[in-house]
Structures are given as structure tokens and as C-alpha cells.
Length: 575
Image (cartoon, rainbow, N blue to C red; front, side, top):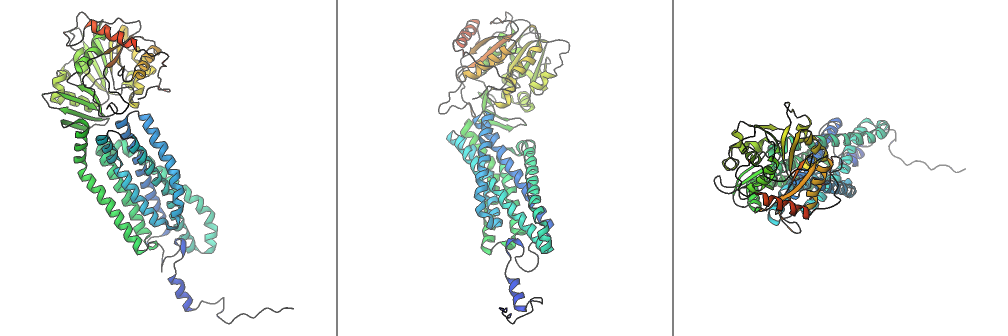
């Protein structure tokens, strides 16, 4: 029988280790965050450390969603077609987030320093994205490729956050379990993994909710797109850098610690400098886009409003980059819009949009008009029309006329609950933004025209601005088909003589786009309306009956066949 070898001499395994082994174990860090030196591995308890990490997850998620919404909003303003731009940004970001998650696998062994550098990079890219996008549009005339590039970069950085944060939370859990002993670690192992995932995604989703609400209700109206993005970047880098440099400082080498400090200070300094200079940048960019004669530039709750020119000379009025009124040719548009609809009864008139007062000016030139109701979404536009000297001179101070009543409301919502005061409207004038803007699509839908038809008096008429017939014929004929689908007979016509074809936003001519050269209009009623000018019409500067009929023939010559109507659930407009 083979006898077992005798054990070597040494300390009793059940007894305490020798002092040399104890000193050695204290000097060697244990991986995974269990112990990085004498005492606790974190400056706070594991429970508090976990709470701090989840708090940073919350802040980073809020910042990430602000970057996404800021890109969507600015792209919609600069490029147009909000649905397309939102789809491009969001789909590109989601794809890039998946790529970022895969790339982050290589950084998990250095999760703390990796996360700190990642957040600094995200803050720099996301915070400056609006500036670069606007600069690209202002000085180079295009922003599509820049938009895709930023969507990819921000998506990759956001996607890389989750794996690294998961690793950091697991290190905290490992530290807590190590403090409870081997039995406690084994018992909590399964529960901690699922709990970590649940807590991490809960904080991420709640943060995204808060960021999504902060952007439209605070950042955009209070700070604007450029400053809002810069401030968001500063919060992003401060949160990520502070977490790593304080909570996980024992996992950092001296070199990594100073590297993180330097990078975060550089990012914060850059964002702060850009914030200080953002007003000068905006003025320079506006001059590049609108010219050197910008007189008013304000961001209302609904849109950006820019007025160029002088208070006593030629002026242009822009809403979100689209030229809405030019003193050089606005009378051609407003005369063609209003006067054909005024042929017939016109005691009560409803104007949808037209807060600048130009359409109301033409309506109130008829002595037979008893009341005009103007429904405008943006009170900022109405206030400028009341107080700006150039606009007041152009609209004739129409807001002082007692026959005019202004209602601040969304036109669609107002029509659904419109009080008729016992009398319907003889004329409805739809002076709304271009239907290619997604926010306006519902105002060119079959449902909207059905509501407008309900407030028309027997024999009443409705006129609609439907976009240029030459530059965007599909949009124009979709409006016409939609009016017919709502049960109205139509008379398409166009007004020519447009000399102001410049648009700072989606109407700016570039590449294969064509600047609008005419105004497409459609007269509608329950029976086919006659096209002409009322016998009691005031003296007009440009519109005559022969020109009106020629505009109708010209529009009909370009008719598109087989165009479908647009509805709320199936909008058919686009750039």
C-alpha cells in the first residue's frame, strides 16, 4: 500500500497566515473593484456608489436624447421635410448605437477611464453639433452629409455607454458581495445581475423622458438650439468626469487621472468659450444666410422669426428660414389670395394663419366686411405685426381695426370647437405655411378641409395657399385633390410676378432644387366657384380679371393626374 507523502513543514492551514503573507495581500489590488488598496474600494458605501452611478446614467440619457432632438429640429429647419429628417437621424443613431455597444466590449477591462473619455467625447461632439451643422448650412449651403456624420458619431458614443456603465455597476456589486463574505456573494450573484440590468435601463429610460421634455419646454425656448446644445454638453462632461475621477479614482493610474482631468477641462473650456461667443456666431451665420440687413431675429415659442431690411425701406419677413413676406412683391400674393374669394357675400371672414396682417389688410379694404376672425398659432408673430414699424407700415396698422379679432390657437384644434356665434363664415382664407413642412401637414389634410367646409355659409368660398405650382407641382396638386376629397369643388390658379425667390431654409435654391417663381392658389366651394373679382373690390395694384383667368389656364396646363388626397393617417406631402 502506498503511503501518502508527509506534508511539508509550515504554518498550520487552520491558523493565521504569517505576517509576510498578510502584508503581501494588502499591497496587491484585487481585480473587479473588490479592493484597490487598504480599506474600502470606494469613498462611499456600495449602496451610495450604486445610486451615484445610476444618477449619472440618468443625466447621460437625458443629454443623449437632447442631442438627438436638437439634430432633428435643426435639420427640419435647415433642410425641411421633418418626417424625413427625423427618420434619417433616429434610424442612423439607433444603428450607430449598436455599433458602439460592440466596440465598447474592448474597453470593459478599463471601464472607468473608458467611460470618462467617452463622456468627454460625447459632450464635445453633441455640444458642438448644432454649431457645426448651422455653420455648414450658412457658409457651404448644405447640411445633409454633416447631419448624417453627427448622427453616426453621437449614436456610436451613446451606444458605448451602456456596456461600460454595466461593468462599473457590477464592480460595485462585487465589492458589496465581497464585504459580505463568500456565502453572501454566491447567494446574491444571480439576483444582482438581473437587478443591475433593470436598474440601469430604468434610469436610462427615465433620463430620456426628462431630456425629451426639457428640450421643447425649456432648452429650446429659453436658450435656443445652439446654446441649449452647448449647455447640455457641459452637463454631460461634468457628470461623467466627476463620477470617474471621484468614485472610481482608485482604479485610475496617475497618468490616466491627469489625462481625464486635462480632457474634461479642455472640453468644458471649449464649450464655455463657444457659449460666450455664440451670439457673435449667430450674427455672423445669419449675415451669411440672410445678408447684412438683419434687423430683428427672435425665437418665439413656435419658430424663429427674422426680419431684414430697414424700418422705412424694403423688408423681408422669414419664418423658420422660409420667406413669408417681402415688401417688393407681397401685394401680388395677397391680392391674388384674397380678392377672388371676396366675389360674393363677405360680411363674415375667417383667416387661418396670416398673423402678419397682410391678408387681413386686403379683406378689410371692403366696406361690406363686418367682422374678421384671424386664427394664428404664434402670438410672437402677431405682436411683431402690431409693433414692428416696417410690418405695421406694410399691413396698414390692421390690428387696430375694431372689426378684426385675433385668436391665438392651432387652426385645426380651433375649427373642431369653433363657436359660430349663430352665423357661418362667408369667406375662409387659408394663409398657412407650406404643406411640405410636417408641422403644417395636418392643416392641408382632408379632415382639416372638412372642418373648414363645415363653417362655410351656403354659397361661401374658401381659398387656400398651396405652394408654388412650378417648383413643387406634386404638393400643389395634392392640395387640390385633398380639397375635392373633402367634398369641395375647386378652381386652381396661380399668381406670377414673384421677384423674391430667396429662402434661407428649405426654399433656398441649391443643387437640383428650384427656387419658387409663382404662388399656387386654389379657390374652393360646395359648387364650382366662378373665378373673378368682385364689383365692389377696391383698387388693386397688380391683379386684374384677365391676369386671373390666365393664371387659371396656366395652372390647369400643368395638372398632374392620378394624385391622391392627403389625410391625417396617410400624409402625402414632401419636399
